[in-house]
Length: 178
Image (cartoon, rainbow, N blue to C red; front, side):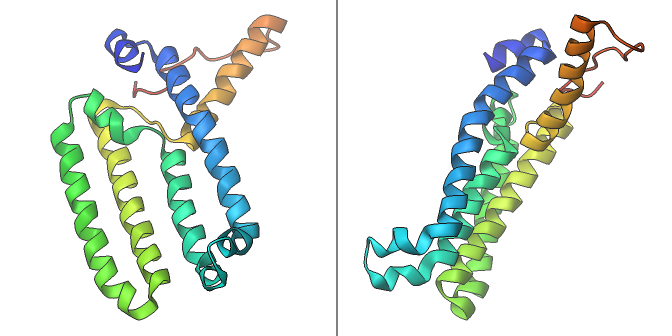
C-alpha cells in the first residue's frame, strides 16, 4: 500500500496508511509502558522477589519501544525509498553508540546504565532515520507530526461538510515537502 501510494505521490493515502500502521502499536505500547511504570514491581515479582528492583530499567526499555512507536515506520520506509545503504550506516552507527554507552554506563550504574545505553542508541537511530527519511524523500512519519497534520485535514473536511464560515487554505502535501 505504502510503496504504491508513494509511487503515485498520493499524499492522502500515504498519511492514511502510516496512521493506520501507527495507531495500534502506539496505543498498545503506551498502555504497556504506563502499566509497567505504575505496577512494574508486581509484574517483575512473578519471576521472583529479586527482580522487583529492575522496575526502572524495565520502564526505560518500555519507553524505548514507545519511542519506536512514536517515530513511526521511518526505519523500514528508508528501504521502501531505496535508502538501504543509509539505513545500514545508521544501524551500524547506533550499534557503535550502544557499545560506547554500555562501556561507560554499565560499569557505573549496572543494569540501569545498560538500559540507559539502549535508550541513547535507540533515540540516536530513530532520530537519524527520521532526519534521513525527511531529507531524502520529504516524508515525516512520527506520530506527533501526523496527528498535527491530521487536525487541519479533519477541520477542512468538517468545514466542507457543514459549509465553511471563512475560506480555507487548500490541502497541502501532508507527508511530503512542497
